[in-house]
Image (cartoon, rainbow, N blue to C red; front, side, top):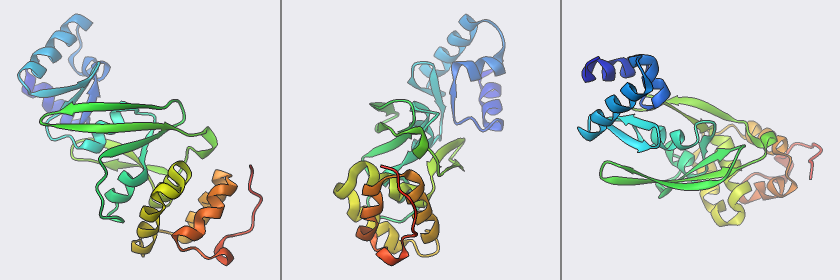
Amino acid sequence: MRSNEFISQLHRLELGVFTTADAAKVLGGSSAYVNLFLHRLATRHEIERIGRGIYALKGAGRFEIANAVEPNGYISGVAALFYYDLINQDPLVIDIASSRRSFAKEIRYRESTISVKVIKISIKRFFGFKKEKGSVGYFLIAEPEKAILDTLYIYKNRLASYCKEAFENGEGEIDKERLVEYAHKMGSNMLIGMLDKIGIDAGDIHAGRIRA
């Protein structure tokens, strides 16, 4: 298969970031052939190698690439709030919430570096995210309400000002009832207690039993 045919097929499949296994499904042939084919494309900069067995098409966005570091996780925190235009600060690090592990990684992509911080959260708090279309492919990202709650839960007072800014700017974007519902679902007294820091009155916080 010619390189342009291969790349066109990946675009049709909307795989902005893909693995060696993804490539094998398109190319067929032995693993040695697939690895050599990808190596040649990467050497010619027709595709970019961003990790072991992970590649990106030209034009793939940084959120697509960041999510590929932990494909079972979702983008959250300040990066998600910035994505929704709820805050003005574009963070230097993209937070990924994962139910499996925590680690940090820097990805060299063309002339820039994408810094990713994967943060483990419990499986009961692993919800409230959706699939979004990027420049070429897709990525998973927290809903606005969950991005606020994840930020408060993980960073507490340190980044509460960003959450308050997002809540104040989120008219028509943030559902206050969903925000409170998700806060209760996360099961953290600390988190419930911090809702007043972003502008939710105590009277608006629905009654419910919060697990420790």
